[in-house]
Structures are given as structure tokens and as C-alpha cells.
Amino acid sequence: MSKKEDKSQNAEILAELTFSFLATCQEKENRLAEQHGLTHAEFRCLRSFGTEECLNNKSIAERMNLSPSRLTRIINKLVLKEYIVREINNTDRRNMCVSLSGKGKQIVQLLNQSYLDIHTEILKDIDESQHSPLITAMTNLLSALKKWGIKV
Image (tube, helix red, strand yellow):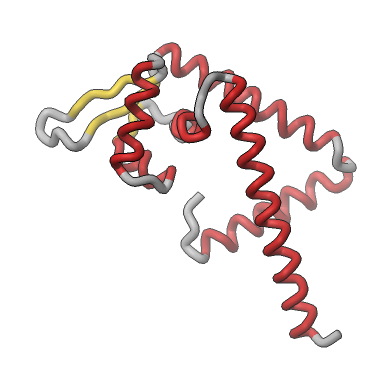
């Protein structure tokens, strides 16, 4: 097999693996969200906060790759569930500061721990000698995706 054919075959395998990987990860997140009474979009929105105290709606929409109107609906639901608080900017009413409430901080902590527990379980099914190479390969893949301007 020529190098060109080999590269093409590797690209085909990588394409199929990433497609399956993404679908499986999304299903994992859907199940985790459902266990906590959240939609997948609400789960992603809450997890987007990380350690930041306050985010504006534009930065959340960019992180989640959503339109502002779709994000507003998600935020409205999270406000009703008392997970987030929003403060409208008096000088620009289209811009708001969104932050986690005390209840929101608790659920995010629980979601983060559940997410970590799932990945701990996943690693149990992979030979320990493969953990470091797996993380290196995934880091390299993520870096390559970012070079293509793909947001994560």
C-alpha cells in the first residue's frame, strides 16, 4: 500500500472514530444530564462556567455555539430551576451577567464529580499502560482540531 493510500485509509478510520466518539460522548452527557433533571443544553451551559464567577450571555453563546435566542431560552429555564442568576446591564440591556446561584454551584460541583467518576470508570476498561499514550493522542488531536478553528 502506498503512503497516499495509507494516509487516506487512516483519515477514513479517524473520521469514523471521531464520529462514533462524539456520538458516544453526547449520549453519555445526555444520560448524566437526565439523571440530574437537566436537558443536554442546560448541562452544557452549567458546565461552561468552570471557575468563572460571572459570564456574559455572548461568551456563553460562543462557548456553546448557540444563537443568542436559543441561549436565552436555556438561561430562562435555568433561572426557573434556580441554578443561575442573571443581572441585566443597566447601560446595555442586551448584555447580562450570568452567574451560578448557591444551588447552581452545588449542582455544578455534583455534575463535575459525576463526570470525573464516569471517566474514572472508562479508564478502568483500558490497560493502565495505555492511559498516558491515550491522553497524549487526545491532546494532539484536540490541538490539531483547534488549528482548524474548531471551537471546543
